[in-house]
Length: 565
Image 1 (cartoon, helix red, strand yellow):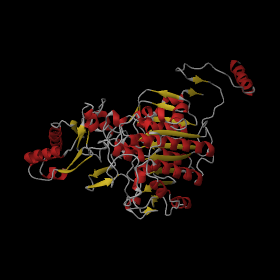
Image 2 (cartoon, one colour; image 1 turned 90 degrees about the vertical axis):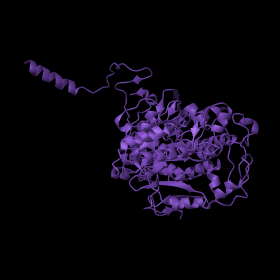
Image 3 (tube, rainbow, N blue to C red; image 1 turned 90 degrees about the horizontal axis):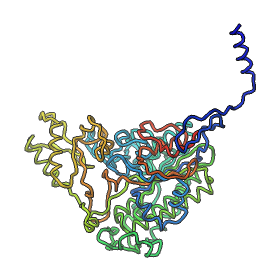
Image 4 (tube, rainbow, N blue to C red; image 1 turned 180 degrees about the vertical axis):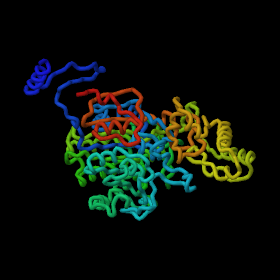
């Protein structure tokens, strides 16, 4: 009888009209809103267009240093309306352009995605390789070897790849950069297109037959406008009155390098007499950023990116900031002017996106692929330790030690990116213990004051390092591609000439870069919690509502996801 009553009760309850029942919310973390039973839309705020902006060699402190001279519509708008990760770092080394772009878009480090540098020694083929060079393909829009490129050395998927896979390739994905690697690696393995700038005597945007057989009409039309010559002919002068550049050192100082064929590194720059490789000047001046925005706007319009409900992605990398940084250094007026002009170009891009896509309909994430060191000569003048390191003396010492211990032979096949690549075939033939030889090499390196530490890379496969800078070295080593011994220079030492700067180290001046999220689904805020490059791709993946790249090792920036339904 009881069973019959219970059955009737169940039937009666199931026949009642259904209604939303508000239930008590579970315990929530501060700032979290939980509404059980509220309308649920998993794809709420999915952007029509995502623009991933990478600024080559932008140190975090540039955002602070030049703040008073920025206008309201560029960097200031991104920070005022977006979310700033103020303590954002690269957590691997070496900090170069190729690995940086790959890490941003894969959510992992060279240890997994395989882009261990811009160039490296290939142990299998016994030759130097470039991270995106691929002789299987030919240039499209160029006859030079600069078109023979593809992403074939990238071992992990990107957010671009995962976006394409999420909707059976209905999205449009385009990579744009002055540098080929800055366009190719972010765009992933199967994008709509990737375009890069051919300087020299060409002055055109080009691509590779990996992507297409012919340039689209809109690209041909853009190249035909002759904008490269227009911008070079303008030369380069200060955007603002000279008094606005009080955050920088005096012009024409000994720490800055002049343009090839010129004798002074000082404003104004007149390029009318430079004819050889004339359009390389576009890369090394703020005009490169302006031309990149011109081309990006044309791509969005011509390809109708963001025009429907399917999310598209534009990977836009600004390279001129890196060329200027290398030539003039972080303290130069030229570097400041480059960023003030970039600020204006970003404002122009935002205004276009507002009109073309609609405010709140697109999302931007902005970061850098690495920072840059202060010029060591300038720092030494201020009494701060550092200098220029020429490793040849160390290499001679290593060679002498190996010959003394193991006899005459070509024991070191290559030294690049602060790594030794050893002749393992010769060692096997002479019955030399590889681990013992690596330890001896490291010991010789450590005798030089410019070297902070040196270790066999095999150590990083058997131990887990938690402290800086060893943990950054560990994440930069790929078992098949990296060398046998790796070293780290001491703080403030760079292997460079006497002007400008470089990058590549695991120190904060190379690792600390900005990270800003802006637009669709982003609430204004800021965090000082340490975030790392591996966190960008999983964060953007969640904002786009797609799966994370297949080798992701980072975590989403959880402060962006405070509200839970």
